[in-house]
Image (cartoon, rainbow over all chains, first blue to last red; front, side, top):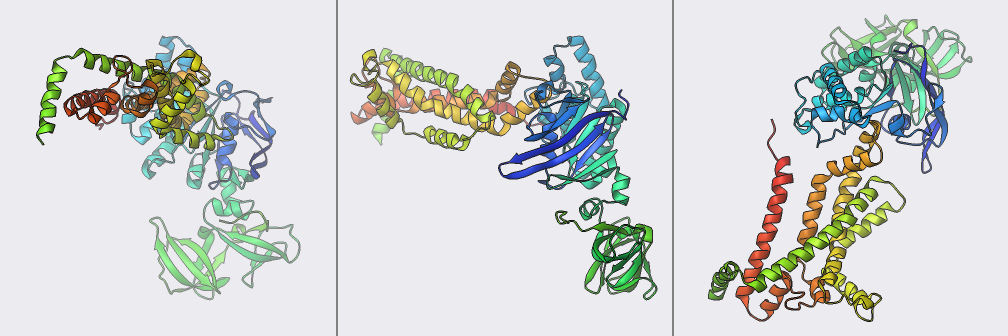
Length: 354
Length: 235
């Protein structure tokens, strides 16, 4: 197992066009050995194209992809120390479970006894022992995905690419598979690069998340860092829910929001600079009317199991609030936010807010 | 109505009398159609796979032409083949006109786009995924081709039977290039057409029954080995 400080893959100034459209716009990042990295972004942001370039199924128009310091660009997909698990599984229906998993080993012309032992070990790992002879068409979606993962892992690739592999599964199965994937990654020590548009999936499994939009990286960081310190409005909105509000930075540590001055902890902005203020719904405290920073009227209350989601209207602007206390539509309330929970960010033209 | 009933009675008598002429016609039909299907498969399958899994400029145009040729009228194909094979045509020196070879050529031209089109269509949709999955697991070259043929074997069989069905049931092309010469180029469809024109319905019905039986048997074999497998109930 490689040390997890080693950069196993480096992506340098990567560019990809489809016709006139820029799909990947000068992307730079690296992946460390044994890392579970997730590329997260909305549909069409370029995440799958990026994965396909790492896998060798697309050629970049510019830039380089290095594997342990050496360029991968002239190495075909079948020669890269990288395996891919596709969204649609792409199992071979003419082969049973055993032969699907053994496919890569047979290509490598491994002795049959070794193949049998490796396949059995892998099937045990994905909880499919005893299913060797089953037709892959008769398996459930979750079982098919396990076969696809076993088939890729049995070759012991140094990097495993996973292109939204849980997208076709139902919610409960998806959650189970998320945990299984994370455990598998820990057990095998293989570097996982996972592509998804599901922020919860990314938060659950990843060591590092790359948030992408319009072919550019918006933020790279651990799930906790990205959640607590989103770098821009897009990242804030894409990871979790946020109130993103136009505001004025009066001076260091003081922002004016809806004509009310809020103390905050951010510094380094120009005086009276137009900025965006991001506040997470769960960071808002509800107080009796007149006792907080802003007063408003509750427009709607939705019970979500663990908490209530409240929409409060204040001078025509809706605030999203999460609380475990029960309120009712029409209630007058006041809100307050701890300065540490107010995140100020520069207004950037090309950061589309969803 | 009597002549229809009598036609059937006479038809069964003809079939079970094992008339040498009928047998010769049936065998020639099978030979011509199997040969053209075989040549069509040898050309259409690899080309269909190759065009299907590769993305290139003009692929849409190629598929449009292919689908048009899939439904091209046999009589037009017969006409063009005849123009090329006729004595005054570019291949006139080979004296192929009114031979079973000419019929095989015409039917090969007829069935190749059918086989190619079906294989192309499936290779375009699922073939690329198979190639990708194979490549990521380390396969290349022949391994990929074998994998593709195995993955598409059901589709290839369907294409083959569809092509054979088109070949054995067409009358226009073989009539023009074969000439329906008794003992030489007379096949089941030209035999039926001729006897129908002559008012000899019983032999037409007899041959029609044989043609339908062959069609039924071919499709039954296909269903049993391919479609039957896929429709099996699975828990």
